[in-house]
Image (cartoon, rainbow, N blue to C red; front, side, top):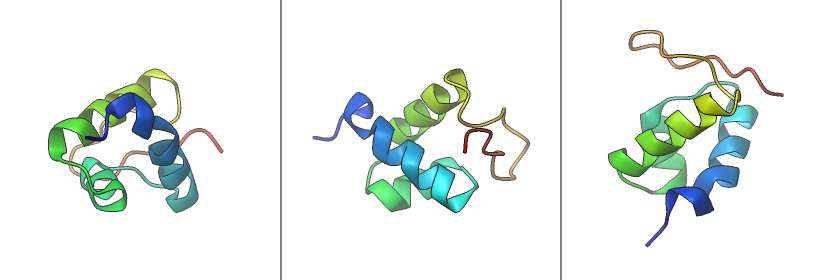
Length: 64
């Protein structure tokens, strides 16, 4: 079972390389479910990698 803390770096690298972040993007890239992807999105936001939610649009990637 893939845990969110083990998936943080791959998620961070994926959103930075794509320059956009969404829960569904992380699900597809890492092959995980919605709950884990949402937890990773929260963690990425807390650590300043991505910006806050903006409706249904992908979040802005702040870290480069």
